[in-house]
Figure 1 (cartoon, rainbow, N blue to C red):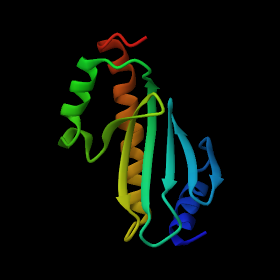
Figure 2 (figure 1 turned 45 degrees about the horizontal axis):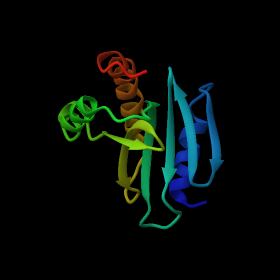
Figure 3 (figure 1 turned 90 degrees about the vertical axis):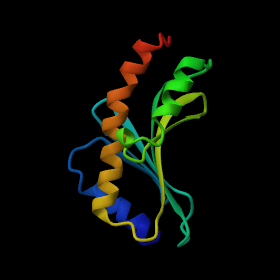
Length: 132
């Protein structure tokens, strides 16, 4: 465990009764409402990156209209640095940054952004683009 791993573990420990879990020294999760936010360190080295992500829904078959919509949203101020992507046949939201200089307030902000934006868009996208 390094100082960034400890920072994340301490943050989650202080989240009270929230549904949360520790997978290993580089992976954790916390549930906020209907959203499970996953937190990863790419390594325990000083040059590691922090990834905060949430699966929105299963996305096994591509929908060109949905792809265009979310790609246009990526990089806008509306997403606050969060971006849509596809991972393991799921539409995901993620936030990636180097760990250098990470503090508890920024970690909390990143997790909150992912949770709030995922909660806002999951049902909307399913309904708007008729994803079954």
